[in-house]
Structure formats: C-alpha cells, structure tokens
Length: 96
Length: 477
Image 1 (cartoon, chains in turn orange, cyan):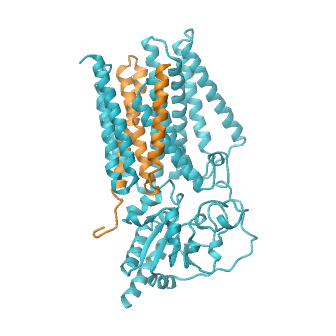
Image 2: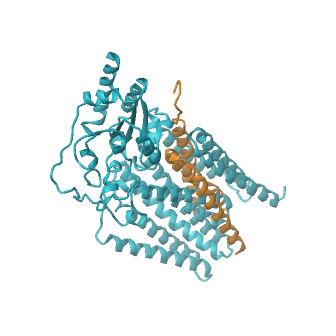
C-alpha cells in the first residue's frame, strides 16, 4: 500500500509538470511534440527488458520480447522522425 | 557492488532519465531549441535503457538484443521513409505500438508473477488489468485511425446499427473482465491457466472496443482521435509502470498522457466540439444541407492576372492555408509566390488554424518542409492581430476555419468556433475549385463579401500562374 501511494504521488506530480511544460509548446511544434511523445512512451522498453530478462517461462518471455520490439520501434522511429521534422524549422534570414 | 547498490544506481539513472525527458520537452517551447530538446530526451532514454541492462535479474540477453536491433531498424526505416503528409498515420501507428507494448508487458508480467509463485498484490492486479485494457484499445483504435487517414480504410464514418449500444455492451464486458482478472489474481483457488484465459478475454474485448470506438469517426475528426490515443499510449505505459513498480515508466507515461490530453482539448476547442460529441457523432459525419435559403448569392470571380496585380502592389499579405493546399501538393509553389512578393518589399505571413492539417501542427510542418521560415507562421491569435493591418488575405484550401458565420449566425453548427478573421483584411482572395461548401456542408459568407474575390481552379496551377504573372509585373515595373 505504501508503494502504491508513493507511485500515485509520483504520477500526480509528473502529470502537473507535464501540464505546465506542454502548455508552453507553441502550436507550430505540436506535430513534433506528438512524435516526440511517441518516442518517450517507448519507455515501456525499460519495463519490457526487466520482464523479458527475469522471466522463466517461454510465454512470458515471448510477450516481453514482443513488447521490447514494439517499444524499440517507437523509441528509434519517434526520436528520428522528430529530428527530421525539427531540422526543417528554420528562421528567416540570409541563406534561409 | 552489492545487489542493493546496483538497484540504487539503476534508480538514480531512472531519475536522471526522467529529468532529461522533462528538460527536453521544455525546450520544445521554441523552434530554435526544439531540436536540441529532442536529443536531450533521447539521451535520457539511452541512459534508462543502459541502466536497465545492468539489472542482475536479467539473465538472457540474446532475444533482448534481437528485439532492440530489429525494432531499431524498423523504426529508423519508417522515420526516414515517411512523407510529411503521412505524419498523422505514422503518429497513429506509433500510438498503437506503444499501447500494444504496454498490454504485452502487462500480460508478460502477469505470467511471470504466476511462474515465480509469489502472491500478487491487489494494486498490481488492478494496474495489470488497466494496462492491458488501455493498451489494447489504443492498439486497434490507432490502427483503424491510421487506416482511415491513409485511405486504406474508408474515411467516412462507418455507422453500424445500434452501434452505441454495441459499444456500451463491449465496454461493460471490458470492465467485467477487468474486474474478474483482478479477482482471479487475488484468489489462490483460481488456477494460473484460468487467470491467463481471463487476460486473453480482456485483451480481446478491449481490442474489439478500440475498433468500435474508431470506425464511426469521420476523417475530419481524426486529429482529435489521434491526440486522444496519444494520451492513452502514455497512460497505458504509466499503468504498466504501476504494475512493475517502475518510477520512470510512471513519470514518462504521465508526461505523455498529459500532452495528449492537452492536445485533445486544444483540437476539440478549435473544432467547436467536445470529446463526447466527437465520439458519439456530430456534424463531422453529416453531409447535412445547412445552406442558407438555397438562392444563389452574387460573388465576384477574378482571374489569375487580376489577382496577381492586386498581390504585386500589396504591402502586406497573409496566406491562410488549409489541408487543400497539401492535397494539391502546392506548398512549394506558394513559397515561390511568397518569395517573389517579399522581394518586391511586401510583408508576407501565414495564418494557421489549429485544425488546418490532419493533426495538431501538421500544416506548420508541411510549410516548414517547403522552406517557409517559422517566424512567418502565425497561430490563430497572432494571425487575427496581424489581419487588422493587412492589405490582402489569401485563403488557399481552407473553408470552415475562415467562415464569418462562426461569429454572426447563432444557428450555425460552427457558431462560436474560433476562426481566422480574414474579413478584417482590406481585400480577400479565395482560391477554390468551385463554390462547393466545406466538410461541414455550411455555406461560407466570406465568399459573398464586397472585398472578396474568388479565384477558381486547381491550387497548384493557380499558384503557378500567379508566380509568372507577378514576376512579369515586377520585371516591367
């Protein structure tokens, strides 16, 4: 129970931080924001690694490895495509 | 190092990773720092993954390595290959992958806990059920959304008979199976096999629910759905974090969940809708005829030569672009026109409504791809301030978002919707194929104003002729 309360506290505080950080993102960057959060939700890879590594049965390991694969797609795909978009955002000026 | 030292070190690395995620996202508040911010978050992810691999509970690395390498290759391939017009599909698919990963993680953890023989805490049971349900709904809902956005599936709303009752029944089934799973994990008399069977049933019901939620939603409402599933993918990760008691999953999941919810709320406000209204049907799906009266009203039509003359001598122009511009693949032609005007001393800006593209911020990315500098991209409020002192507002491929009925006609479905007030400009040029109405089927009063000129035709062709006409005027002048 104590662990649950701690976890809920962390969740609530992180939600507040997220709210204040993300309301500052201008509309012009909302698409990179979404693809960037795709990458961050790939954090599931960390949990999947723990479960995959610690499992003893084939089924549990198979599910966790599948989760590792999907989350890794999100992490690599998300960060790379976000970078690809953000490098196109240029300021006005000589030489573009 | 003792085992406890290793655990402390890993948890410290998770704290650093979470801080880097927040710092990285904070740098998205300006285009100039955003790219660095993305890499800061990526470094956080790298630290979290490397730290995890030091966990002494991890015994088999081969399959893990294979999973990461294959995932990295697929992810990098998709990131390189995707067209900017396809970004909504890509984000939708990634939302789905995130949801699926969380659901699989929840199932894998459930099986592992049974294998290890210990009892399962009640809160772990609850969060496993939550992670499974949210993750599975997100997977199929996102895949249907991506299919509709890509045109693989019919983008019109598919309305099953009694669909709301059917969805409600399935939703109840998801809740019931979730409750059953929680009970099963707490009752030692329930066998492992039965509990896993209930897990599969819960996942299956939630997968079905995701489909049922998505298929009635029309193409124009897709941005809301994609933003909502973006949030769910984060919440599913947070639920999985609760289940395995991992703080970095909870923090990152909460950040993504908050981000998706904020974007959902921005989009529904910009569309004059509520999430409930989008989910259970509204005017996005009606082709209803709400034109006023039906009698033809007079409007002024101009040709490219006339429009070019207006533009060539203007001191200030605001382009208001909608997704029609991207459909016509005319962003580069618009940029060419803007460059010519700027060379002649005209101040050029772009006014972008939140729903201009097919996802939040989509139009900005499409214009950035065409080398439009970001300081020329104005959001709704900035555009409306700029239009007070603008000679020409030029509307390309947009309709409902510039319809003054949003202010003037309380009976209109778009009444109260925030719009770009192009009618404040001294003159307005509207580029359009024909007088047909927008997706909402509402007649646009803007087209009949005294200062409005209609330039009919394909946006790409019209822009090309405007470029050559303006060029000629500038050379001769």
